Image (tube, rainbow, N blue to C red):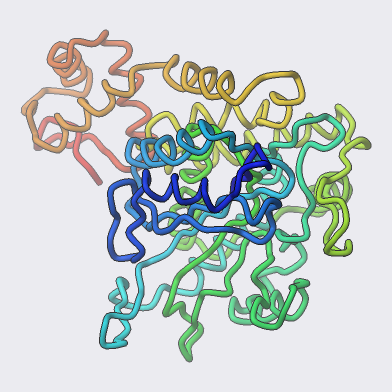
Length: 414
C-alpha cells in the first residue's frame, strides 16, 4: 500500500496512470503483463486512499518476483509515492482455488493438506513472530522502528500443541479485534481466516496470510520477505514427519514475553490513535536478542532458501540491520536496495549455482569415480574455481535435496 506524496494531485489520477502502466489482469487465473491483479484505493491511506496493488499468485522464483516488484514500485515512486506508518504489505501463500464461470470450485490440491503441516507452520510463526516483526520493520526513526499492531495482532498465545488448528482459527476469530463482523481473525499477524477444514480436521483450502511487514520501497527487500514466507511453509512440511514443534522452552518464552510489548504495540488502541509503535524503551541488549533470534530463523530456513536466488544472504543482512535501522541512520531506499543486492551477490555467483543444478538435472557429467572428481569436472565445465563449486555442492548436499550416487557417478536429486 503506497500513499501519494503530492497531496495537491488527485489520487485517482495517479491510480489511473499506474493502472495504464501495470495493465492489471483483473482475474486471479491470469498473470497479465506485470503480475498485477488490480490497482485500487485503500481506506487506511490518506489522500483519497493512496494506491494499493494486489498481485496475482504465481510460482515462487526469485527473478520473476523481483522483476514484478521492481516494475510495480518504479512508476509509483517516480510519481512521488512514499510509505509511512499507514502502509503495510501482506504475503499470501496458498494452494490455488477459485470458482470458474459456472460457479464450480476449482482446487489445486489433489488431497486435503494434513493438519500437522498447518500446525507446524503456526508453531514456527509463534516461535519467530518477534523475528518477523524485526526483519520486516521499516520505521524511519529509532523511536518508532515499526508501526502499531492493530492490523497485525500477535498470535503468540494461541498454541497448536494444545488445540486443533480449526480451534486456533476460531480462537483468533473470537479474540482478534476487528473493525466489523466479516473480518473476524483477519487482523492476526499471521491469519488463517481463508482456510477451510474437513471433518477430520485436515485442511481442504490452504491459504495463509502474513500481515506483519511494514511498507517498503525496495524490490529486493519485498522479494526476500516473500521468499521467507514461502520457506516457512516448506519447513513446516519437512518438520511434520517428526511431530508438532514446540515454540520454545520456558526461558525462551519468558524472553519473548518480556521483549514483545517493547516492539509489538497498539493492539488495544483506538482505531484513530497514532499508528506508530513506541520503541524508545527497546535497549541495545533487546536489539541484540532480536538480531540473534532472527539469524537463528534464517539459518533454520537455509535449506529451503538455498535455491531462491540471493534470498538467504539478503535476509541475513536484514536480520542484523533491518530497513528500520538503515532508514533511521539516514539511508535512502535506493541505497538500501543497492547495498542488499551487492551483499546478496558478494559470497558467490548465483549464476554458477544455476549452472551446477543444470548439469545435475541434465546428467551432463556422470560416471565419475568419486565426488571430488565430479566437482573438478563440473568446475571445468562451468568455468568456475574448483573451491567455489565445492562450496556450492556442499550446500546442496546439506540442503537434503541432493545426494551422491555411486552407480551413476554424479550428484542427483533426492
